Structures are given as structure tokens and as C-alpha cells.
Image (cartoon, rainbow, N blue to C red):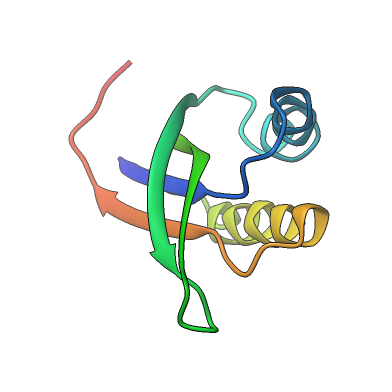
Length: 98
């Protein structure tokens, strides 16, 4: 199986985050995922360090031809919706079972 971790910044309100999850993530990964609140920092395009709260999604999935498109669509929707520069995506193969 595979594991994708997506890291979302922006210090958005809880209701806005939940709305985004409901509209963008759940329809693409209805079998489930795990969400975490985060605290971190990163250097933006202007070279400034930003510290902010954020969110992480952990998704475990098997091989499917459209998974990469789904992950890309989630990242792009979040960036547009909350005027963000990026959403970090990390993917690794894992040994998992349900």
C-alpha cells in the first residue's frame, strides 16, 4: 500500500478547514483518512519565515490510476480557496492492512 501525508498551512478557522475536508477530501477518499492539527514554520517565496498552525492529512491507499490526480486536485483546491503558495505532499510505500 501507499501512504500520502499532506501538510496544509494558513491558520484557517476550524469550520473552514472542515468545509474544505468535506468538499475536497472526503469525495476523493471516501474510505477514510486521518487529520491532525499541526504547528510549524516554513520559508515563503519572499524569504520570510512564517510560523503558523495548520493541518495534516494521512491517507493510506492501494494502487489506483487516479490517486495522483486526486492528491493534486486537493492541493490545488486548498491553495486557491485559502490563497496559499503550496501544500506539502509526502508519499511513501508502506506495509499496511485493514
